[in-house]
Amino acid sequence: MTQENLVVCGKCGGVNRLPPARNAGDAKCGKCGIKLFSGHPEDVGAEIFDRQVTRSSLPVVVDIWAPWCGPCKMMGPAYEAAANELEPHVRLIKLNSDKEQAVAARLVIRSIPTMIIFHSGQEVARTSGAMTAGQIVRWVRDHLPTVAA
Image 1 (tube, rainbow, N blue to C red):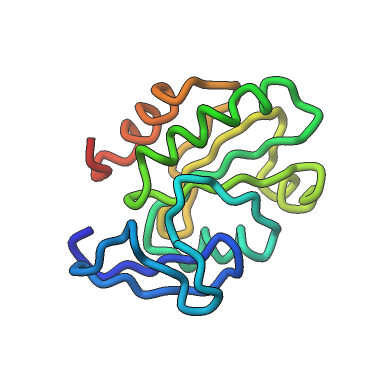
Image 2: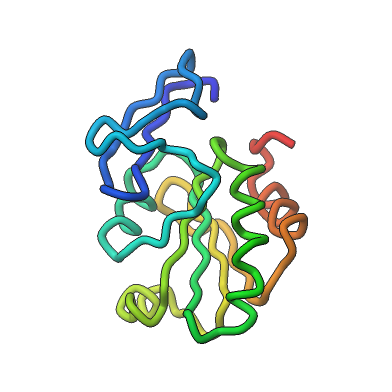
């Protein structure tokens, strides 16, 4: 990170300023005190999803899933492994399409799992179907060339 970033907490939705001199791996939310980057994608509700997409200066990758979806469950560990590799340059979150049907409808989700990359509030890319951790990382880096390899 070369400039100050705005990082939205995955738990409470607090917006945190992260100066370039600060080790992002050690950064904690100023509102709730949890680590901002844990390598574990938070399963967020509609309000925090919207804050992540609109307030974060980091790119946000969202995995839209459902608990009954076999491929979604299979991809869960791969998505977590990808978070370990991509954070703190990218924020990875999860959105349960059963709990957040209005958001899934707004995003025009037709199949799950679906991953969408957002940057500066805009959709950059989307893909559907389960992937391995390596495929997820490559897909993100292909669409966000500024993310370090």
